Amino acid sequence: MMIFPMREIFVSHGRARRIGLLVAGGLLVLSTVIFFGNRYEWFAGRYLLLTTLDDLSGLKVSSPVYYHSVQIGRVVWIRVPKDDSPGYKLRMRVNRRPFRRISPDARVRVDVSPKTRLAYVTILPGREKPDRYFPGKVKVLKPVSKGEQWFRMIYDILEGLEDLSTAKIKESDIEELKTEVGRLQEKIEELEERQK
Image (spheres, rainbow, N blue to C red):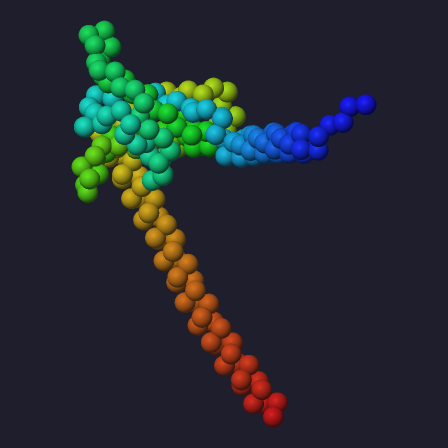
């Protein structure tokens, strides 16, 4: 009969325990990464917006891309104009959620920050409703023209004036209601005095 020393049994048992804990910890970390990766779209990849611009105004690769004043991505590629294809070709990589909210008639414009003097891309929302079930990962957007930019600015101003006039009408309605409530309160007081 062979006798095993106790020391070897405890050493191998401790080693197996450490390996088991290491494997369990690795599986826990892997499952956590997969869970949060799917939840926050770490593995979803990026979506592309393509456009052609006449002037870059200092725009460069890695410049930010904004939609509704929120940064949604970066410029990843710029191709200079060639004889057969005029204009700077831009490729912008954006996140999935904002990509779904960009309508097909959205426009692209290059702006320069007055504080930092750095150029960035602004995506102006379109008038059409976005297709949330857009089948691809690439959208081609047109640049905003000077005339269209003025038209958009005037349209936005007129919308603001319409909202302001609606608010004024509501304000005058509120004033009328206040005077009506005051008149009704006086009548209630008169009726209460008559009943006494």
